[in-house]
Image 1 (cartoon, rainbow, N blue to C red):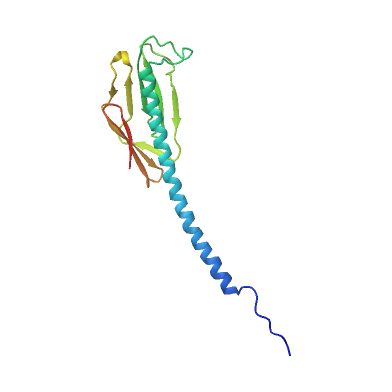
Image 2: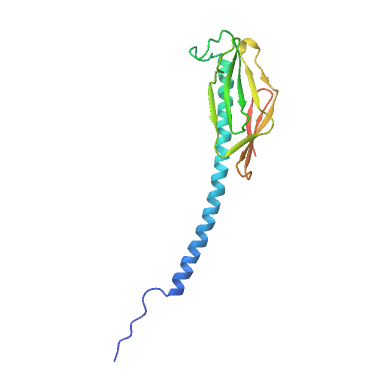
Length: 166
């Protein structure tokens, strides 16, 4: 009498179903990761911009003059956060009584995978001796992902307060 052994292993159908389900779940994960990545790029850009606007504000409040090797700044009037015309970069520049050629740039940043818009092309922070102020009085700067699917709005208050909104 021949002994009968139970079948071991998996059938071809079981393997195909398992591989198909794994591929479907993996494709959903990849799609969600892609959108998560775009959202995080916009979030990080917004935080970096707020940090650099604060830098311009703090430089003005502390009345820190630019490096004398770059330009002799006899009287510091203000620091400005300026969005470049290409809408992907910005810079922080001082405003001194003397004209410096070339223009003194304290910091220049070129952003990747985002664009800047919203009508607020520059923010000027005056130093204490010039009467502390911000020009223009309030406004907003919008950060968009390259494909336009995600955005964050940086709102600059009249007093110089900064908030990041949806």
